[in-house]
Amino acid sequence: MIMREVTVGRSKDCDIYLDERCIYASSHHATIYYDGNQLMYRDNSSNGTLINNVSVKHRAVPIRHGDSIMAAGKYQISWNQIDVFFPMNARQMPPQQPMQQEPYAYQPYQPNTMANNATVDVSKWNWGAFALYPIWGFFNGCWWAFLIAMFLFWLSPIPNIIFGVYGTRWAWQNKTWSSAADFMSTQHSWGIAGIIVFAINILSILGVFIFYAALLSAL
Image (cartoon, rainbow, N blue to C red; front, side):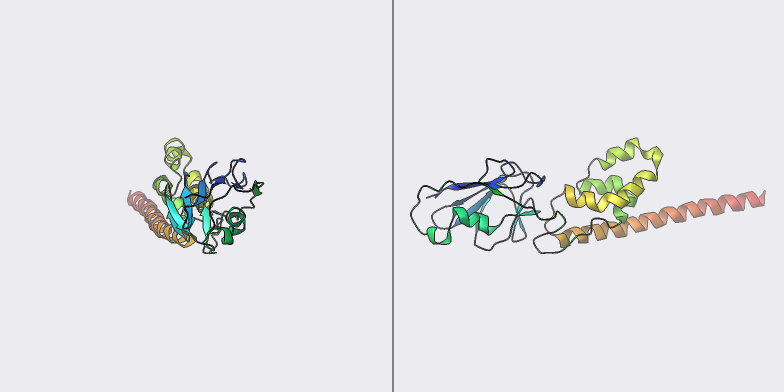
């Protein structure tokens, strides 16, 4: 039997209130309830939840005291907040009417940290975004990069430089990653591809110049 359902989200009517600055969390992100045997976490959100670094989306899973719970993969839900509604010694007792609690104001983690405490340097130059931004954007939460390539191609290489500078930040903020390590590994792979494409372009340009220089000297 369910003791009660505790709501989690950015809406101020939620029991566990995520600060409005938690922009990647949903208004009613999840519910936590006791099913008579164990605590359950049900995700209702757009960007999912990381529980012990495992992605959970649109489903209910059991949780245990001390589990790492990150709404949208970025904002930690504290067990101090959960224990207010589900005290450890009350989970074995028959269901009863809950006490009225004021919602907790949540102080979010910095958006560039993950549950594994790895840190992402969002200011790092992104070679993949620089050289391949129309394609890179589709796989890194920046689908609008293709539109920029269509309408601002005449400004090249200005869009390339902008994506090189801000690409890491945009990819980290616009897509939910399973971990910081996964994010950094993905961007590293894109970076290698970007450097190869950039080097090929430079060599092609040099080859054209050498060809025309040789042609002019022969005339």
